[in-house]
Amino acid sequence: MDAGVLRALVELAEPSGAGWAVPLNQEEVGMYVQVSKATVQRTVRRLRGAGLVGKTGRGSLPVPCLPCLAEAQKYGQGVRGCRGDRGCAVRLRRDTEYR
Image 1 (cartoon, rainbow, N blue to C red):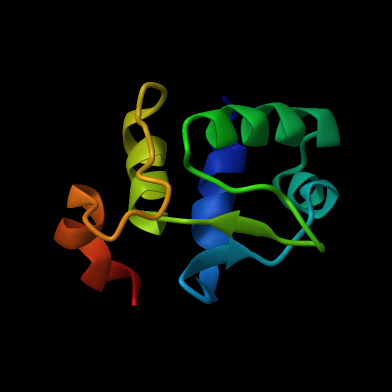
Image 2: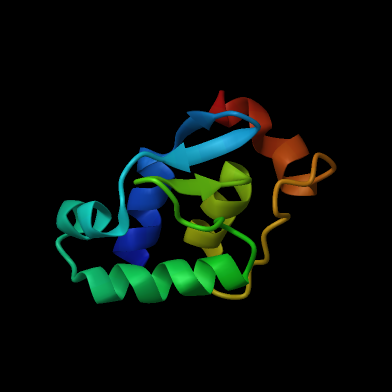
């Protein structure tokens, strides 16, 4: 998992509906971090498998729980996302940091 891509996703995420979203497509994230689109795609695929990001659509990347994504940035692989569950322990503990 590319640490630069993960860091950029946490930095760029904005409130959106019930969660957060990165308002860039994968190619734009790659340009922002100065990595290839393939590197972004690999990282997003792994994050999606861990429940940390949603399916890409319309030029943005949904982030169901920004605190979980930030935990993944901090601790690396092995962190599983809550997929936006309102009872998320990470969100309840850290949600005020992201408002």
